Amino acid sequence: MSKTIAVIRGDGIGPEITNASLRVLDAMECGLHYDFVDAGLSAQEKHGELLPAATIDAITKHRVALKGPLTTPIGGGFSSLNVELRKRFDLYANVRPAITFPGTKARYDGIDIITVRENTEGAYGAEGQTLSADGEVALSQIRVTHRGSERIVRYAFELARRSGRRKVTVVHKANIMKTTSGLFLKVAREVAQEYPEIVCNEMIVDNTCMQLVMNPMQFDVIVTTNLFGDIISDLCAGLVGGLGLAPGANIGSEAAIFEAVHGSAPDIAGKGIANPCALLLGACQMLGHLGMEDQAARLRNAIRDVLSRKDRVTPDLGGNGSTDLFADALIESLRGHG
Ligand code: NAD
Image 1 (cartoon, rainbow, N blue to C red):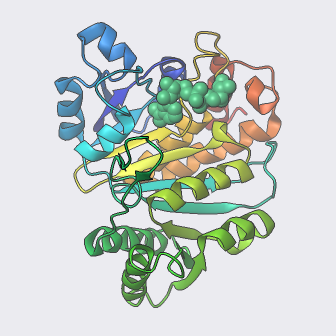
Image 2: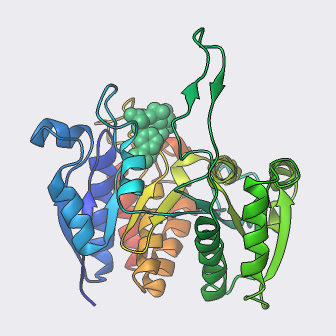
C-alpha cells in the first residue's frame, strides 16, 4: 500500500522526535510518504502565520496527519493551536491508550486501557464570562448534545468491537450534574444496547479516579465527556510512567491527527535527548487507523523490546541514550537484530 500523510514537525523538540520517528517508520517500509507542512511558532517564523492555509489544505487532502508538539505563542491569535485544529476538522474523538511497558516506571504491570474522550463540547466548549464588575463572579456553561454524546459513545463501542475488547466503562457525574452528564449517560445506555457482546458498565467520575489508582485492571475502554476525559487520560498516563509514553489521536469523520500528548519541551530542545516514544506510539495508532494493524503491532513490539532493555533509552526513562540512539535501537529491533 502507498499512502501520503501530512507531517507537521512542530516546535521545540518536535523536529527531533519527528525526524527520529520518520526514520523508524521508513525502516518499516510500510509505504508511507510525507507531505511536510508547518504549524505553530515555526510556521509563524517562516510564513508569518501560526496555521497557514497550506497546512489546512494538506490535512484536508491527505485526511491523516502526524504532528509534533506545537508552541502557541502567548498573545497569538488562537488560545491553543491544538484546540483550533480540533475545531477546524471537527476531531470529536480523542483516543488515548495507556499501556504498561516493561522497564518503565509504570505503577502496575499489564495495564492496557484506552480512554475515549469527547473532544468538541462539554465544559470546554465555551469561553465563559465574568459576571460582576469586581471580577469576583464567573460563569461558564457546559453543553452536551444527543448527537455529540451518541457519536463518541458509538466510536468507543466500535473501537471495542473491532479490537476485540470486552468492556466499555461509561464515566459520568449524572448523580449531581443531572442534565448534562445525565443526557450523556442516557444516550450511552441507548447506544450500548446495540453492542450486546460488549459489557457496558457505568461509573461516577470520582470513584473512577480512585478505582484507576487501586485496581486499574478492571478497565478496558473508558468513554467520557471532555473535562473528565482530559483528567482521566492524564491519570492513566501517570499510571504507565508519564507523558513520555502517552500518545493521542484526534479523530473526526474527515480527518485524523496523531500526536504525542506532551508539549514542545523547550527546556531540552536542541539537546538531542528527547524521548520519541510517545510520538511513535501515536504513529502506531495512525498505522491502525490506516488499516495497517500488523505494522502497528510490529512497531509496538519493537518499542516494548527496546524499553525493556533500557540501555539506549533517553534520560527521562532512566537511560543515557539520545533521541537518535533510541531510534537506531528501534530500527535494529524491527530488523530483527535487537
Ligand atoms: P511539556 O510537555 O513540553 O514539558 C513538560 C516536562 O516534560 C518538561 O520538563 C519536558 O522536558 C519534559 N518532556 C516533555 N516531553 C518530553 C519528551 N518527549 N522527552 C523527554 N522529556 C519530555 O509541557 P510544557 O513545558 O508545559 O509546555 C511547553 C510548550 O508546549 C508550551 O508552549 C505548550 O503550549 C506546548 N504544548 C503543546 C502540546 C501539543 O502540541 N500537543 C501539548 C502540551 C503543551
